[in-house]
Length: 351
Image (cartoon, rainbow, N blue to C red):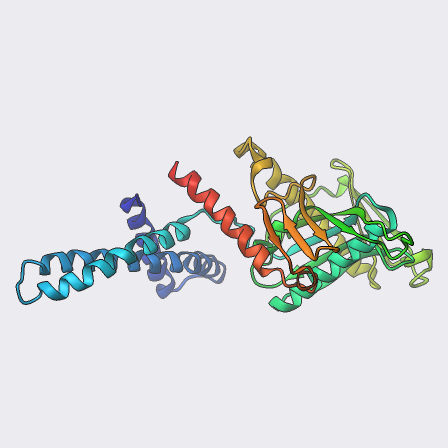
């Protein structure tokens, strides 16, 4: 049952914002109002659709008493009645609480887990997969920190992804990814199991994160590449240690000034993520059972090369299109995860 008083409050708020924006206000205020207006508009549009179909049903029922209109009403009523549940479901989805971080850019971190060189190579495969997915969606990827092995694997990579609704799509990727395949170095043809961890954090863009300068230790050093060879001969790389939390962030671009900016952005993002996790833990004692929480200790997915299979264990989804997935064709998987998360929220809202 949809609470009509709540719907009226949403419509009234939307109308207030519309009038306020039409009257004009300061630049900062107008930007804040415009964001809220933009968030509410699809909800208000859906409310209007739901209200209209209910009015149409009432009008059709009234027409049953008119001999001249009865036939038309009897034809329209079943169609309207069939549409009503669909419109109500769409409205319920529109009313679901939104993650405030969904529209933010994301920081992507990939590290090899168990499996040695094969795990590092798999981590590199994941990086390419996400890079291609970002290209498909028109997002921009910037590598912040990258440490490679001599075989072309990834020891650690940190990347920034910017675009529309990046975190909303990428947040489901946090966790342990497992691969089952025959490594190129395996002469006996045996299948090995390796793993890599993926963390996706909403960038702390526009978030007021207070950091005391006395809590920071900032070191400069030379950037180095695979095999320990130096990329340049200047001390341009920057490492920032946040002493209270123990978080260490490094950036190895060519400009030391730019590296300080990047490292501080990543530090703020990790502190922002810690606060989000703390708040989430307080709200839900059953965090581990929920999709998209960013629990990086959870094994979420298996990529089985001999069978050409990818299985997402959170929703028991198996697709036999591993090649396409590794080429960045992730929408089917992410859409299914998002739909499952919506279903859970709907169940919570109706319980």
